[in-house]
Amino acid sequence: DMAVSARLIRRSEASSGEAGAYPIDWAKEEDAALEQGKMQATNNDFTMLDSYYQTYVGHRLSQLEGRDKDVSYDESPEYDDLRCLFEICKAKSIEALFVHVPVNGKWSDYTGLTPERRQTYYEQVREIAAQYDNITMLDLTGEEYTPYFLCDTMHLGWKGWLAVDRAMDEFWNAD
Image 1 (cartoon, rainbow, N blue to C red):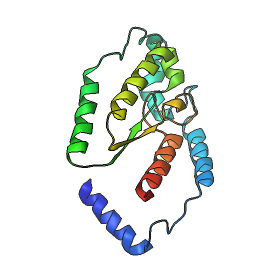
Image 2: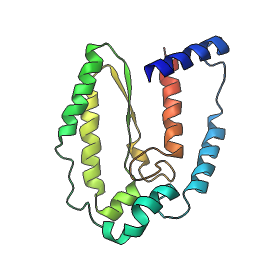
Image 3: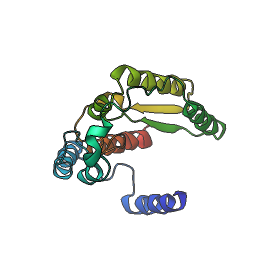
């Protein structure tokens, strides 16, 4: 990834001449993301990508209802993994933009992962990130009910990636 990214960055620097040479019309991009989401998420009420829903959910929908009612993220070994990542960033003097992605709220409600348990998870991650002054967090967890923000149960979709793109642009170009 670094090799490919480095080439793209060098090419961009050589062609643009200066940061911000190509201003982005974020409102126009938001409209485009919304339209793409509407076109690609048409076969379900969870605003999931049609192909994802058809492959993984649709034929099993009734079986999945309530399946997460006993799931808890109060404790998880992944929290230590996150601390490890942040420690490595700190040791290497990396100023990182950490994206805190929501889950699909409507889907989670359907499967029984309650808003309270989701908030516990979100807060655990916030508390971990707050311990590191080299981590800037983009907290998108308030978007769990935003249509087309995610493309499935937990991965960024049309509007979600646009929010990340905008935050990365601001982060990269910040003083």
